[in-house]
Amino acid sequence: MIKRLILTMLVALACRALPAQSRSAFRPVPQAKTQQEVNDYNAAYASAGGVALEAAANDFAAKYPESELRPYLYSRAMHQYQNENNPGKILATGEKVLALDPDNSVALALTATVLADGLAEQDLDRDQKAAIIKRNCSRALDTLESSMVLAPGVTPEEITAYKASLGIMVHSAMGIMELKTGNDSGAEKDLKAALKLNRIAGDATVYYHLALAQDHQKKYSEAMGSVEQALQLASSNPELQKLAEAEHERLQKLAGRRSSLGQTSSQ
Image 1 (cartoon, rainbow, N blue to C red):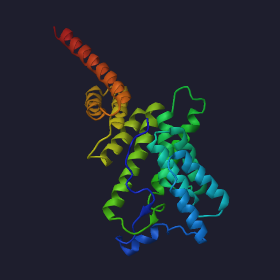
Image 2 (image 1 turned 90 degrees about the vertical axis):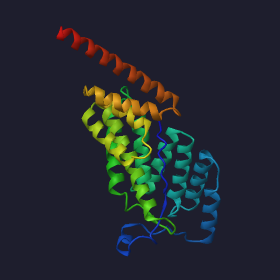
Image 3 (image 1 turned 120 degrees about the vertical axis):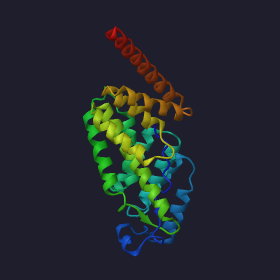
Image 4 (image 1 turned 135 degrees about the vertical axis):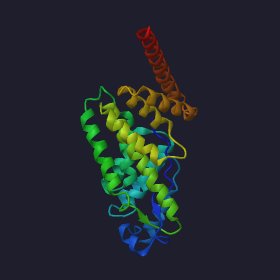
């Protein structure tokens, strides 16, 4: 499941509203060498749909192999594939972004998210994928500020929201990976960190996985609270809603058994 976490600032971030001493931490705006490069970039950027955007990015990269603008076209394709809920293509274009820009925090977070969501017990390269998720999440947080591009028009509040959105995505990916690899206490910690950053809206996927992590640790009361939160938020995701309903039913049955055992022992 690809989480629909809204990243309000994907590439352009303000320096105008920031204190002068903070500006040196951010990247300068990338530059084209010729007007023709600018024109070709704008034409490619205007392509509609993930497939067309990726093809346009490939053509642009072939024509301008040294252009500073190449990762931005692949990034646009990556986000379009995210809108189209195409995990395989998100991963493929994210890797193209990272090949050109290894510190791109959004690509690091998105590729980690796709890998975590798709991680399965039967994967032969399970340990390798888990290692990549850890590496990408750690690097995304380390480069969160230094990978931002300076651009006018964005407020400090929007920058704060951007950082929070990236943090939510990174901690969610880590938590889901830890849950799937048996580190339930680590999963609980990271998933709670994601929810702490997302206090207003919450996230059904995060609450569901948090319920599982708490269930595995026999924290049944906490797990029930988490899965009930997931059910309140999952109406737009029928697949997740079914999973949350099944977990809720399981926890209710466990509560019933514990209640029966308690009554028997007291007699």
